[in-house]
Length: 492
Image 1: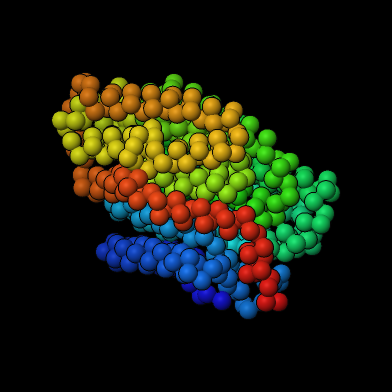
Image 2: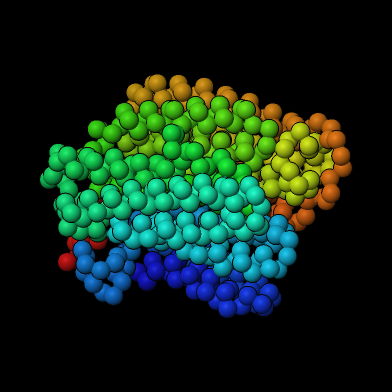
C-alpha cells in the first residue's frame, strides 16, 4: 500500500478546516495556503513519479481487503490529472490574492477552495463508484458557494442553474449506482468490472452504462447537456472560472474514461458511434455559440463546450492513440483555457466588464498582457510551436489512422472557426482603440498566473515528446484493465 495516495485528499481537507479556524488571522491563513498548496503539488508529482516507476498504486482505508471497505487507486491517468489540477489550482489561488477585494472575501474563498480541491483529488483517486458520487457532491457544494461568493445578481442566477444541474445529475447518478449495485452486489470498480463482464449482454448493464454516460456528460457539459455551463463559467469569480474550465469539467470526462475503460469495456463498440456523434455536435454547437458572443468570458465558456467535444472525440475512438491524444488534449487545453479565463478576469477587473467592445489598446497599456494573451490564443487555435498545435495534431492523426474521417473533418472545420473567433477577440482587446481609460492597470498578482500558464503552454509544445510518451503510456494502461483489477483485487 502507498500512503501517498491518501495525502492529496487529507492535506486540502485538513487545510480547509484549519482555514475556517483561522478566519480572523489573515497572515496565518496566507502562510497556511502557501505551504499546503506547495505540499499538495509536491505529493502529486511524487505520486505520479511513483506510479511511473512502480505501476498502479493502491491504499486500503482501514486495511479492509476489497471489495469491502474503501480503496484509493492511482494509475497514470489519475496521476496526470492530479498534477494538472494542482498547477491550475495554484495559479488560481495566487490570482485570487489580487482579484478579491477584501479579507472577508478571502476568509470565505480560501477554505471553500480547498474543499473543492479535496473533491477533485478524491474523484481522481477513488476506486469506489459510490465514493465518486460523494466526491462529486463535495465539488458541487463548494462550487455553488464559491460561485455566489460575491453576491452579484448574475452569480445568483447562475447558481440556481448550477444547483438544478447538480440535483439532476445527483439523482441520475444515484439511480445508476443503485442499478449496478442491485445487479452486481458491489460498488468497488475493479470488482464491478469482474462481475459485469460475463453479463455484458444484460439490458440492465447497457441501461446503467447509458445512465452513467448521461450523468458524466452533464458534468462535462457535453451537448445537449451543456445548458448550465455558459452562465456559470461567465458569471463565476474569475479564479473559479479558470478552475471550472481548466480542470472541473474534465472530471466528467475522466469519469467517462474510467467507466468505459474498466467497467463497461465490452460496450465500447456499442457506444462508439453515439459518443462520436455527441462529440461532433458538441464541437460544432460550442463554436457557433462562441462566434456570437461579445463578452470575452462568455465566449470562452462556449469555447469550453466546443473543446470538450474534441476530448470526447479522442475518447470515442477507443484506440490507444486516440485515448492518448485525448489525455494530452486535456492537459494542454486545461492550461490554455485557465490562462485565457484569468486574462479575461484582468479585463473585467480593469473596467468592471468583460465586454470586448469596452476594451482595446492593451498592446500599449500592458504589452505583457498582450503577449501572454496572444500565446494562449495561439495555443487554443492550434498554432505551432504551442502545445495546442500538438494536441490537435495528435487527435487528428489518431482519427485518420483509425479511419474516423467524418469526426476528423468536423474537427478541422471547427478549428477554423475557433481560430477566427479567438484572433478576432485578441484584435478587439489588444489592437483597437478603447473608449475610456481603464480604472486600474494589471497588477503582478493578476499577470503572473496568466504568464506562468501561457509559458507552460509554450513549454509543453517544445517538450511535447515526453508528455506524449507519458499520455500514451497512460492510454495503454487504460486499455489493459486487467492491470487495474489485479492491483486492487490481486492480493485478496
